[in-house]
Image 1 (tube, helix red, strand yellow):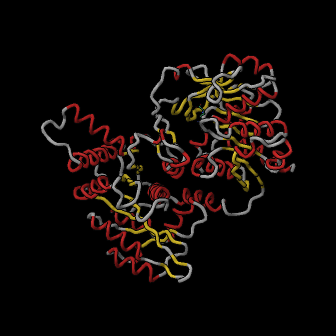
Image 2 (spheres, helix red, strand yellow):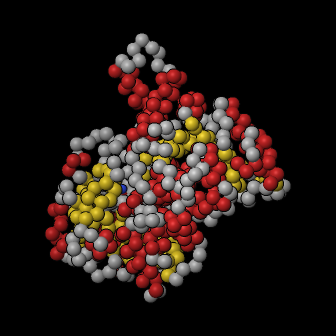
Image 3 (tube, helix red, strand yellow):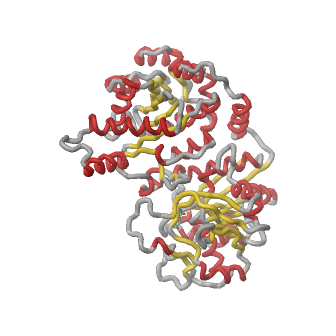
Length: 539
Ligand code: GLN
């Protein structure tokens, strides 16, 4: 089978939304029944994203197969409604460690190992192998970083070489600024960017432009001239209200048919039913709806929303499933650490639901515990994700069971009541990279519980990323004091889900947000939003 390749590069600056463009291209291909997957290249020398700080790099996304990858994978999965694997993520770190392994084995014996041809050949081999193994019609490659970076230069060179032998379509994303004082779209930065792309031997077939306003005719024409393209191939990416609208915006500009033509598969038919479903969801986000859910996410990385990207998306999908208008506020947990109950009530009282997401380290922990106590005592819907579940049990131990000072040994190694402790098989682990309990694991649910009802099944599979766990020594005492243990791991004796008895409050050791998609909202989020709507009605 002959495979085709689309390579998406970005110019001028990061943050233009290359990941969303790549996801939208994948979505379009899917709508036309083309079997395709993404492959992401990141130039940094980390082996994977697991050792990066979410505050700097955004959320660490976890795949079923334990891969800790870039947050773009979240968008790929949400747009395609399909799970990815870690072979689709190539980092500079992975690449060079493989090359050096080969060198040590003697595979390059007698040669000096060089970027060209050894690294570039290896990249091409990796890429064609993925296309082959996955039996893809089209592999969509997203090149992280910007054209001109030292970090991705050898990768772009490998793509140029790939295009000499294979069918490769290059698509470049760029930015068209506008000076307020002049009120005119400026093409010069993009002209320069296109020039540097072409200097690398790459001729894009489409140029997608981010801009404040839709591209003017003259802007399009000017850029087309510099890009050796027809003006219709200069595409607008300016008017969308939410990311899910981008595939629709591309279709409205005829990008889909031009792309199919370029791929030599113009005969494919658009799946209208699937498209309408997507449209309904994308448009829903902007329109009025009958219910209302106000949610407070209390965490420590709230300044950079990218740290909790999947949480935000999962809440959105669940709101859609409940026909609810969603309001999310991001509350810095450190700000409510020393707050009085009155101050907390003033801050959190308006919300129907409170969510504590995952996290590491002790900063802001007491503020999150305060928020959980407030939710429990005031019958707010509560959802705790990973750390949020661990803190839910700590709060319960301290404030319901009178175990003063109960804690996780992650935050206080000397705690009298170690309600949360390091997992047994973590105790001997010294290396930090890829050593947590990662990936998808089955959870067995107890019938009659809220979790069981949410999933509508006795078993669920969710993704994980943690080192600490509920201490089974306290399992019975918790149960006696009314905390429901509703989910256990199948393979090990790990408490996976806990819940309150009298109103909606669920804590899960997993990260259900990572598997939530517009077409398949995460069950726990769906129930959480439902409960939050009910609570908001009473306010
Ligand atoms: N820090 C906690 C642990 O390692 C929680 C991790 C998380 O929330 N992802 O178990």
